[in-house]
Length: 189
Ligand code: M6P
Ligand code: ZN
Image (cartoon, rainbow, N blue to C red; front, side, top):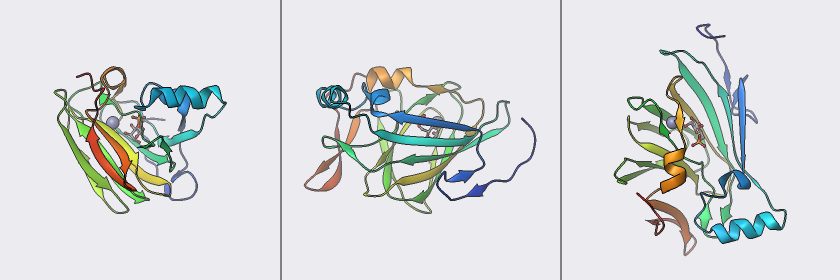
């Protein structure tokens, strides 16, 4: 129920507990997002459909409230590209978000509508501030689960469509065994 105080626990298999919403994203949900689409289709045709990430969230609805969510991105790659979240702009443009790293290691890409990208590390104890107007995607560049908390206005809304069509201008891939940020040759900004 909205406008009721609560307290929840950090940690455990769901990152936060209790939660009100669970979202699972499998490879087939991200088939238009990974840069090697041929490989994605090949994997899916062989029945390989790994779980890429899960979000456990305490969701509210009204203006003035916050959603508090925990995202767990599993370790892995599709070809050379590390597992990531879809990424989104907020439907309500002047809304920001805060990420707090809990465990694992990764990167967050933040992109404006002109395709300018900023990248920050997400590690245990890191606080990342995402200002209004920037799309955000997080990427697990490590060998363990990447777990982080996200706190954002409950009425922010998710615009997935823009990123689904354009992609991010940068990709995070493995080069010589290391996570490397490269230009996305297929970016359609
Ligand atoms: C964070 C927040 C959520 C978001 C989730 C997964 O927890 O930003 O709002 O839903 O990451 O990211 P996406 O929705 O882009 O798949
Ligand atoms: Zn967001």
